[in-house]
Image (tube, rainbow, N blue to C red; front, side, top):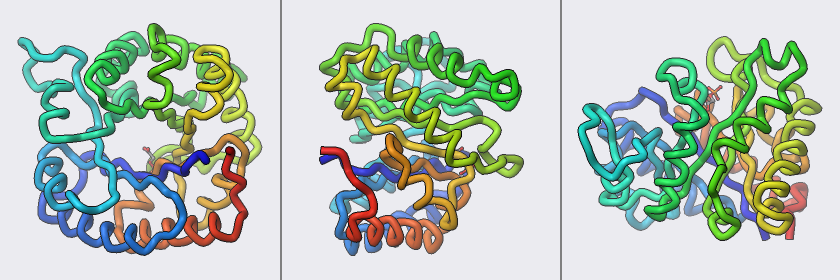
Length: 265
Ligand code: PGA
């Protein structure tokens, strides 16, 4: 059965102390969940190591917000896959729209990072999404195809089970974001699924989790999750407060147990 993946990227928020308190509370919340939900958090680099130790026994997966593709080298300010491996991380988020927008993160660079992450046994969480203008010009599908085809270039079927994809329309993210309507999300996730099947083969492409992100909150989380091909949620603001994230997780837990989410076999 395909599990749901629900997680949060903290962006440039939370001190080590705040992060540890949050992780501790999250550990307790997650231990009460009954459904098969993979919960993950993506703190800042400085908080990763202490949080890794803090949640050593909790079923919480941990990720980094970015990495370089090289094992080591003269790349001041960068973090390598080996460094992430060294602290026992599992997930690395790649291609978030803020990295594309502010740090010149291209599809080609994301591809190098995806290949490096896979080579080192990390799980790439690849973020894709169209801008407001691209949606306006009705080229969202084309943009998603390009982003996926380049990001996954050279990725074999055997690696597919370690990939996570997050569809995050740029216009839906952050303070200025407008929550996406369900029909749009549904259409884009179906398109992403079709591209994944085309690139990775039907079997691998079908089972790969596609998360939705962008202004997800307690009021809309179940609506998004009830859509076909939405296999999880990637949450920013609404998950930075542990009570709020806890509520969302408990809602999802009840939702799954009530059989409302037909998890694919
Ligand atoms: P948001 O952020 O939930 O605050 O819109 C989503 C994201 O950036 O992944």
